[in-house]
Picture 1 (cartoon, rainbow, N blue to C red):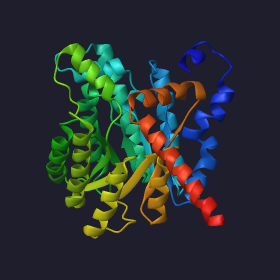
Picture 2 (picture 1 turned 180 degrees about the vertical axis):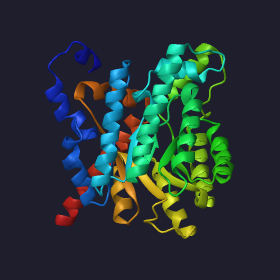
Picture 3 (picture 1 turned 30 degrees about the vertical axis):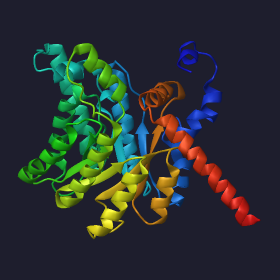
Picture 4 (picture 1 turned 90 degrees about the vertical axis):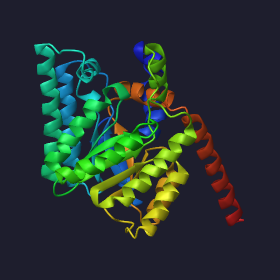
Length: 350
């Protein structure tokens, strides 16, 4: 697919009617309207995710910033869009973030000016979200640039999370140090008198992380196995609910066990199903059995809906598929559920 796109072969029509249609809402915000409406009719919110990345020009970063702000404005107008989201690498050069994250590298005047523009874009996005009362996620990235993102995310929380949770940081639990990081966030939130917004995920950069650690001869930040990741994810959910007065949680997971655990714990902690501090989230086109069952039981649920030009979004989708080794197993699992349900309905009709 990537090879065909690079050769500019006329495959956009086919792609848009197949894989793009399954996992994306459209090429523009307006094209996402049917998806927003369809999900909303089932009590599921939409998180518009402008999934264009890998740009290197300042004009492109400014354009992306403007589109992200447009998604926030759309969320203000549309009751079925509870959150907005953006990636720092969508509004900054990756290489700049690498240098800014390395304390041993001194940035040039030009790089410092570029970094200031990145910070200004982040501020403009979060300020708009605050003014329009639309919570916004800052997505997680690779470990070697995550520290500076964590710093910026908390700076934005200190500015805008005093009265309510507007800014959310994303914590990837496939890293063995993230549970400790999460626990350290409570005291920071207490000290600054802010609500710490957390989007909790397992993670999406495992292969790249391990390869880089091996190539550069440093300890891998990745958990020793999937069970360790699952254990930390579930512990993180419990820890947040234990300290819910200092947190807001969006549980981004396609894992049935974690979803069931959180649903049961809300009852245990006497937290209402529709409490705005706790949401479940999945990707469009995946884990519908989790999303729709939770929604039918009146839990807060939202779907990530990627959008953007086909040619520019496809690399993002293929990278996600390549980096998430569980996708193949997840797809087989969902196919078996569909077949089982179809058989059940045939028998019910008979």
